[in-house]
Length: 372
Image (tube, rainbow, N blue to C red):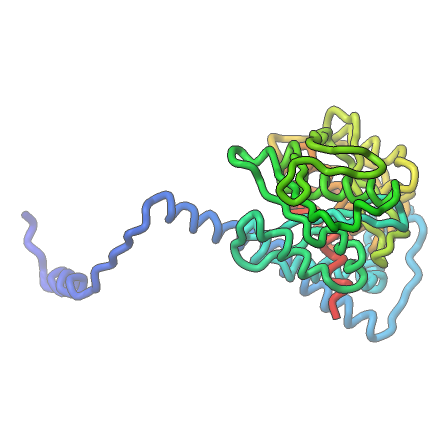
């Protein structure tokens, strides 16, 4: 064996003095922790620049500098200048709320601890799914009550009250079947046709967002739900049809909201073309005039969306469009998307040319906008 010289013996002696590190974690646990750290680092790289931009934009708005955004750009150079003006002076409070909403949810998103509650909105006659962050790990039966506690304030309180006393729990198995228990004195039993319909749609959309495929109804512990309008309801299947997200500007929640509707699109690319061309009654497309969807390339579970912009959208329009496209991508099994557009660097709060993860759910900004 090779004889160590003086310096090597010193190094060997120093190494022997180091404490012994014992790590009882399995390799799977170590890998899981590294994966979580990588996801959190990607989240920071994605949102911290946006948050910093929001701070600069807020200062610009406070300083009172307002410029008119040109309706059309003649070339890429003019378009690039217009975008700088848009970012500096037209970022509305609602777009900054979207940034704040995403920035405020890192822990909940990292743990997957977000619940989507579908709230019945009598003003527009539709249900509005809202992503609600939850604190800590909760059992399935605890998730709805925890979300409703956060919704127990204006403007959600009246709509959330329809879930008062309602319990939702998954049946044993793969979680595709859910039990929904309604107390016998619930207000739905004395409600009219529209209210009963919205209540059932809200229950089904909420269960769908939790991965349910069918529901068994109970009145307390007795199976079945006797509704004056719909009769006795025991079970119902939840449509797994892919959906497209549209917007409604007249919701009782004070902002434009995104609402999913069933689609016959066979692919994500086809869904985007439908999103531009038409919208169901009471809803409107999120793709504004002056914006066209060009190529859509899907590679595995990632999509690259090329936009052609002739007239710059407002900050709110851009943010709403980007979120709706990402949520529609999620419906088609995609995990992230990249937006591209000549001369643009941001689409609302979303950076162009970078991978953007699909959101946990829609309308998260509503909660931030209503915070005291």
